[in-house]
Image (cartoon, rainbow, N blue to C red; front, top):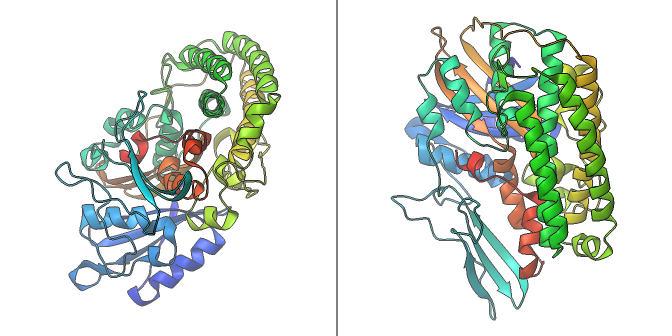
Length: 467
């Protein structure tokens, strides 16, 4: 998506950003050189408000009023030496020489502080969660990630846009297709090209397969969080079946290189007829699983009321995806700013109201039904019509923003490209990056044993937040 960019003077910049937060969906913020940039999307376009830093690389912290920018601005301070005047949380976002900054804890008589992580009992990636509790009730939770920060954005700078594509796809396994799509859309807008309908349909099928296997994993983990082992085992078996469909669709279980700039990968959709047949079978199995899961009264009772996050909290922290739609906010980039085949295949946006674990699981259940419908409609429409080889892209220099609706919400890739088709700057804003601070706030007032349940009802990614 070509983005509208506007440079704003320092005096007006903060108020302009805050006004834009009220009328559009804020994507995030980043620094490049002597400038800082705040990106947004609405039904009309993507927009970037920019300003040049003041003397001494000074800027006003927007997070002092809009907490959704806290991680973004701390990252700008750490990585680009932006000197924010009034950061409400001035700690480094990541560890320095292996030492993580001290956690924020609540103070008061009778409070206990304890830490979960950074090493966990399972095979998930590292994150440190510091609890302040009074008895079993959580008073405050501080979440700290970036133990596995890799410096991906710095590494990709200077590469050609084609060289960077497979590395962008591998920033994270669970969001690979969505992030590849965002990267491709940004480049295709700079090249001024549109794709044929068969390629758009193939991409849609890939994206919905990614949503299917992620939501199945999330619901299985939420069943485990509620103490129902059979629901976890059965859900993960279905996730395995969905990942085998991914391998059939493109040759890779995690959908690496299924979507590439200018089209789809060479091994994508070689047998759409067999893929459609197996998708029908999986849909029937998933339907029976969902009936059993949501028909289990003890599981549903555990979900109700757990990890409730108010609508105002979600908006203040910039929550996206099922976490936001679980509070009734109809924000889905597939309908807000349609791209590819979503321009003509209509998405039914799943909503809930209670904004607790049950609501988040309900949204994912409903999205699963719709994802199967969309994937099957795309496969039936393109039946016996393979997508064409990827187009070569003649990219013009400039700035572009690619935004798609991934399984966890908006996945954003922002590019600055030079006249040699090289990346001057790439900034990746994942849905998990946006939603992790919300997990901490959703635990306020809950009991400590509910943390696995609340956490898994979001089931966010560490890797794409650490990038």
